[in-house]
Amino acid sequence: MKMVFRWFAGGYDKITLEQIRQIPGMSGVVTSLLDIPVGEVWPLERLEALKKEIENYGLEVEVIESVNIHEDIKLGEKTRDKYIEAYIETMKNLSQIGVKVICYNFMPVLDWARSELARPLSDGSNTMAYKHEHILNIDPQNLANEVGKQSGGFELPGWEPDRLKEMSITIDKYRSISEDQYWKNIKYFLDSVIPYAEKYDIKLAIHPDDPPWPIFNLVRVITSRDNIRKFLDLNKSPYNGVTLCTGSLGANKNNDIPAIIREFSGEGRVHFAHIRNLKFESNKDFYESAHLSRCGSFDMFEIVKAFYDTDFTGYIRPDHGRMIWGETGRAGYGLYDRAMGATYIHGLWEAIDKMSR
Ligand code: CS2
Ligand code: MN
Image 1 (tube, rainbow, N blue to C red):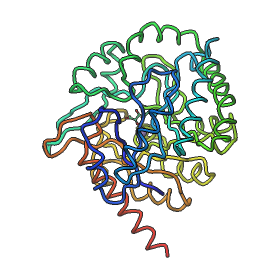
Image 2 (image 1 turned 90 degrees about the vertical axis):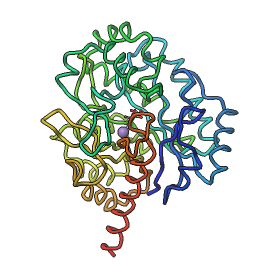
Image 3 (image 1 turned 30 degrees about the horizontal axis):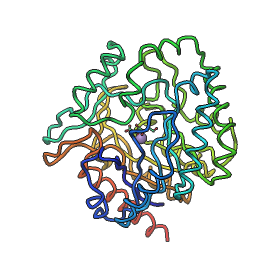
Image 4 (image 1 turned 45 degrees about the horizontal axis):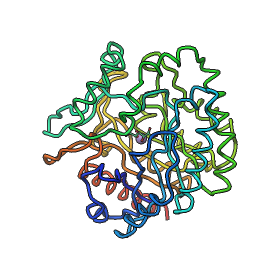
């Protein structure tokens, strides 16, 4: 496996490449061009400059998160082909700078949802939290406003302004789309882009829906073992794979994360892993804890061991962390807690590796 760290390029991050290179065992960053509107081609010159900037710090840029999918593709509108063409062109440009994996998601309109971005914990740190009751009783526009207010001025991945602008109109369009139709739209996308993924040698890795159940009556499908199986069977190329995000999938207690990792990583269909822990407060309520098993509800040893035992050769990044030591910044994406998360995962990996020799 290769350990990587999410970094928001183009002045969107206050964490520097100089800081990231000093985290032990970091091979590279996971990044994107946040200013390019969804549906437009990422220009090769911009990507070449980005690669140069990152490589100056001895870091690689082999994983992109995300190249977002235009709503017209998800909705299956007639205009989708033009956006699919742009997607393929972006993949081609990314392949030219040596990108190996693209993480994306297929959630309607919204990406992840939380009810609080900075819940104070008893140790003085703060973290993101999800209260189901709150999400049930708020409309999406108000949630977007709340997220905006709590974000401290940082553009949050998944809550980009161009996504929120026409949110209510887009949400209305989804009302007429059945789950069955949604699966068809996913398949149409996959069958269009996967041949090019093969040609350009870039693996596509869908991110699970977060939380893994419908919110605001919008369909959500990448939510469970069975649905991931269904997704992978839509197009059986090994280039059609998943980003195994423990915190997103694991928010549903019925999802047995180590078993899901063993199954799909064992088949070589997991290309990227997001590793983080959650602490459940009730069935559907949780906060994002520190990475250690003892701090949350997941068995992180079993999670890392499942990757190890299936000879996982993809990329791992520590997912969201808390804000600690007085740090302020983009919710979930501070420096310190994620750096400790990465080191902890390295520690588990080394121990498992040595024990199994
Ligand atoms: C990420 C997602 O910050 C997060 O919650 O895990 O926003 C992720 O980047 C996207 O869903 C991937 O497309
Ligand atoms: Mn994730």
